[in-house]
Length: 351
Ligand SMILES: Cc1cc2nc3c(=O)[nH]c(=O)nc-3n(C[C@H](O)[C@H](O)[C@H](O)COP(=O)(O)O)c2cc1C
Image (cartoon, protein in one colour):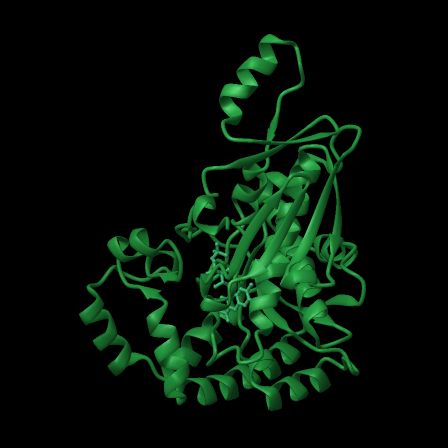
């Protein structure tokens, strides 16, 4: 199955084994080229995902791509309800839709989870659906977990992000008021205190840290030291270091410094708190981050207040968000990029 490639040719659906070979034949015959759908997946899987778990699997059926959750990649300690997992599926879905649109395919997305999957039907359109900018931003965007340079984002750019059309029922809020940002830092502190004293949380986190390049290249997932701006260490030393030096106080000191160096906070919040809304939150977030990338703006998560239920309520109140559900909290600003986080190959995620 992995070696099969599925393609669409100008309205006709064909399933082929060797697209390159057939493309040569079609070119000789003057027929339109076959489109290799794995190209869409190549861009799709560059999506954000919680702890870079990449919790997705794909089935490609003629003009239909099904996205399945990979439940073996759940994060039960930090994400017991699979909220992050489904937000991550929304991120991968958004990239897929952008990549297909870039190649001139209209997409019809089904959230109904028939057979446990999100369905994406592809239909040839007349020419490209989107301009190239979102597509070109996909390989560049990243979570830039480092100190930012303190420059302010212009009001015009905040307005550009704030006016981006998001998925139905999902909104984004932007906070630049220093006093409000300090109050959010207070919630991050409370979150760190709870999470850093939770053994399961720490164990899960450590299991996904790739302490050196050899580990990062072997797994091609998780949180690599390089992508987090940390030095490369052997696993034994890295674990010892975390055991003795990773605590709530140290983490907060770093978080405070990083948040204060940023220009604004962005909160993505849907009206509902169910699986479909999480997927739509992921789609909206990916689009916002791509748009920010086009504007040269970096982002990094500081999600603690969204992950601890009692803090979520406090954040809701602080933001005057009514009954909306803050799902992602990010800082925005300017910084040099960090090393890229790796992804598994397309062949590993096709079933
Ligand atoms: C739902 C979700 C939650 C995330 N939560 C955090 C977080 O709490 N802290 C963090 O540093 N990054 C967080 N991230 C970012 C991921 O760790 C990041 O996307 C992944 O490591 C891949 O790295 P890249 O985005 O730079 O390619 C989150 C991403 C998603 C989609």
